[in-house]
Amino acid sequence: MQSLGPQELAYVEKVRQLLRRFGDRAAEDLQAALQSLRQTSHFNVEVPTESSRREWELIKVGVKRLSEWYTRFLAAQLDAFGVSVVRVGETVLARTDRLDDRADDLEARLAVLEQGLAKLEAGPEVERDGAAGTATAAPSRPAPRPKPAKPRRPSAN
Image 1: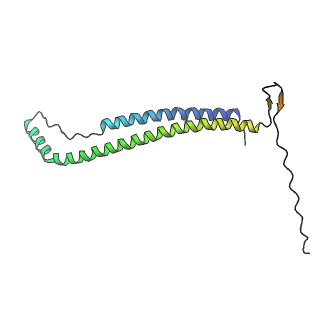
Image 2: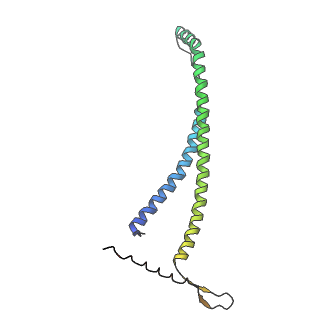
Image 3: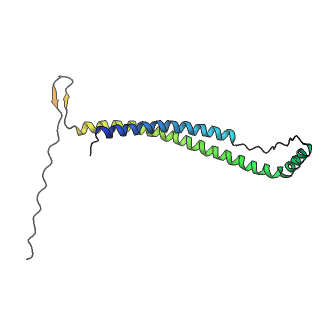
């Protein structure tokens, strides 16, 4: 395994910090986006009909009455769509939170495993005998036996 120099390690740490910051902000932004979507997902079909001129007001009222059934139908569909989108967003946010929690748990478990592996890779260590207070070497494994050489077959020449 290739070891990283100080510049590479500094770069890796900088990337990790940015990712942590982005991850925190992304969760907040998603929560804010869902709240905004909840607030704006209702469509109003009540069109203002007031006018300074009486004839224009009458025309606006007439057009509103003629098209009201159609716009209400469209607004109901858009409202239902908005509610569905909010539900999808809430589901994605909940799933993301669960995955973040699981990732944190796995990172903690990995750190423990890496510490154990580092101890194993360090080789035999000196352990203290608790009763006598003397240092004893940890038992080491016997060296593996070399494999016996395979006999060669005589050539047919």
